[in-house]
Image 1 (spheres, rainbow, N blue to C red):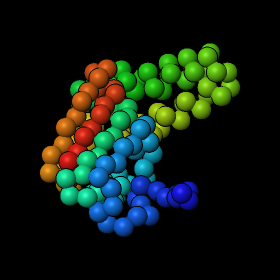
Image 2: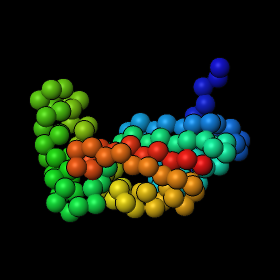
Image 3: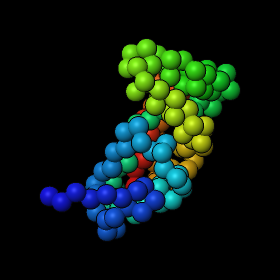
Image 4: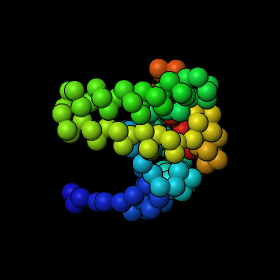
Length: 134
């Protein structure tokens, strides 16, 4: 099977190709979340399912501040202590997290192209699983 490369915003497959799509800790790196959601809907077959597992942006301001502080300050330090200089790359996660829509806004975004959206939240909304049904 040949290797295929693409980006969320321009998925190199025909319409109605897949029964399911799974994104693991990658959706936050999309350049345009709305275009990515359009593309997911385009390449999914009817009754297809999209699953996004990622860090979340809590709706509650206090939880959001906690998650943001952890990602910005504590996680890079812990990663450095565990992995040395390689762990410093973890500080980049905060920049992508800042761009993320809040969890409730993510549900609304997915709802523009999918008939039903579920969110499973852990760590006060700092870790999420979105399941969207076409």
